[in-house]
Length: 399
Image (cartoon, rainbow, N blue to C red; front, side):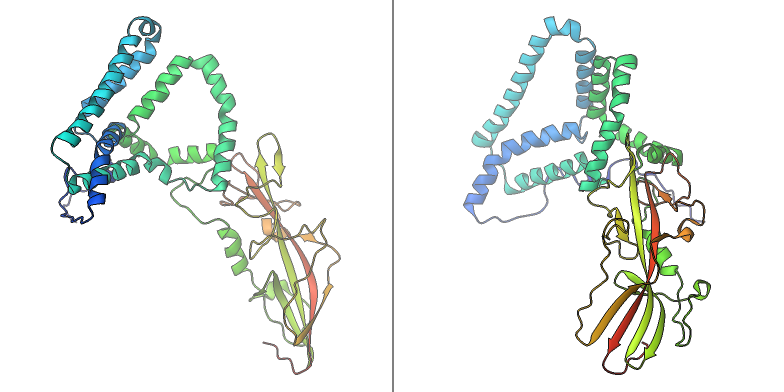
């Protein structure tokens, strides 16, 4: 066994990319570019100094600590400070900002001119610090689906927020907590605490049950369960003399467009008859105050979709179903329904209920056959068989 010591990583790795001086010798031949970089250098330093305080990447962490202490005193003792100390603090803050900006601009214009390497180093540090600042948002895939999730989540916790402000916390205490968390969010100790807490599986399960978001370590693509089930569903090419369907002997399933071929029979040298089945999923989502509805996110599957392709399908109960049309002049296709109506596939939910629903989390994963607190979506399968007669003016082989 190796004696090598393994250390846990509790600090952001992006902070190591910060540099104090550039070691790359860059040659800029354009005088206009050099002049532009020199002119914006004071503002780059000002932005860099602001970001290093927010991201706790400065050399002196006590500056951040003093800022947090001053903010806490200002918020918690606002009733006293707003009459006596607030005017002095406003003047002090304004003069310090103006003095710092003027000193940087004066040094850059009348002192030693910044080199191209120094300007590029400042740009590099700003880029890295912006990456550190927006690191928590990297794990969120910003799409229309997630925007709806965040908006609905905000509306859902609004009653809790009102209850907390009216009964547990005062607005002043709430403002102090929010401001302190914002100012210390990127500190090394806060980052380490979050990493340690998130290592607990119970914390992740609680967050998943509370929000319904896909925040567990094991992430699977949506609709994987449907596709794996469809790929493993057996079906066989029956012999030419067999005209009866036997679902227990099915071993192979041929997929053409949005239906599955169950059986092939050669009627004549120029005609081939196929028994096919259309599988349509009915999808619903649970909304707060509305219950189960067919109102789904714009970026996800439709309320009715084909099982194999997940493409939008017509409502089998309302719309007139249109059979597929093949662009081929050599064949003639004739369709006829074999079943009188659409039926629920009882095998889809293992005969657990007559309604045929299978319940999932918010991302159509983790299927279960019973409704529960963490079930936000559900699907059931409708199926109907049809006869497809393919006619050709030459010999037809059962391929």
